[in-house]
Length: 190
Image (cartoon, rainbow, N blue to C red; front, top):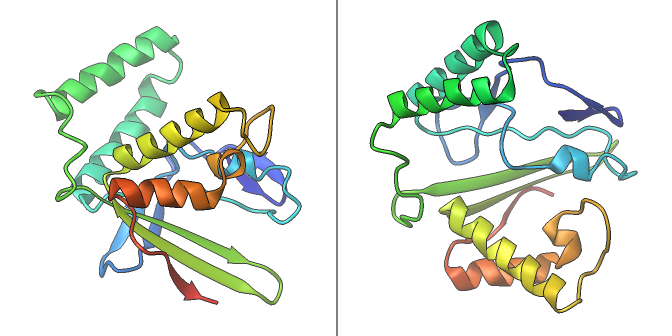
């Protein structure tokens, strides 16, 4: 889902968006899936009326394959039971990567870039954050969040909340810097 004028709206099946990514010369195809819950987090935030989360990879041949599989899934398998759908997608995964998933924690191989563009009536801000190996980033965020909850030091309680609200952005930043996975944020438009 994405947030459109304060309402969660489902993306059309097998959607893609062409995006321009800071620091990359090519225009890339992105898809609306990831582990991000930004649209849900901001659903009731009075400052945010529209929100989309998109994911792309530099390997655009792989993105083309993913988009083709998303279309095939929608046309031929969306009506199946969840266990039948999982069997189909597991078979696809074995065709794409028969050796299993590639290593995810290689700091020299895996690059991540998070961008956020916010626009008000007469004000706009864009920020880009560079780092490496998103899975180690996610682990550092998860560990800090669990530690905060176990110590009873959470800033918010109950319901779905982003780690920045539970732990605090400054601590998360420091944890990722300590892990060596977080670059310096760059303000692109102020």
